[in-house]
Image (tube, rainbow, N blue to C red; front, side):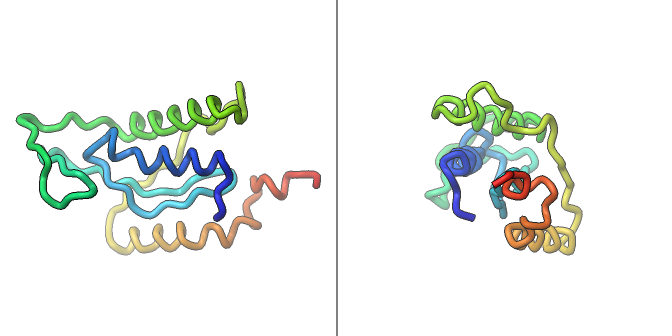
Length: 139
């Protein structure tokens, strides 16, 4: 997908998630014209914080990191995108996101591989999407 300016804002906000939630690791994702698919890995507990640029720990926290629920992570991401999109002058005063989101807990390797494949081929199937903005456009 070639990202437009809003897509680039979404991409930047997605890549920032681990900086705000250090127990979250990003996995495969794709930004589509009207939605996003992505895998977030939420690590359990733990006290080690490391920089993505270094393999060695950069500091040890004396207490376990308080983990936020998935809804808080997704809500923070959506809020950041909305703020930056509106500040950039796009879609001002318009909602950007649907009210909720779809979540699925990946249970095993087979499930993981199926979802990775779905994310990879999703851009190829965009013409089949009933909510594809290009299909809805009268042009």
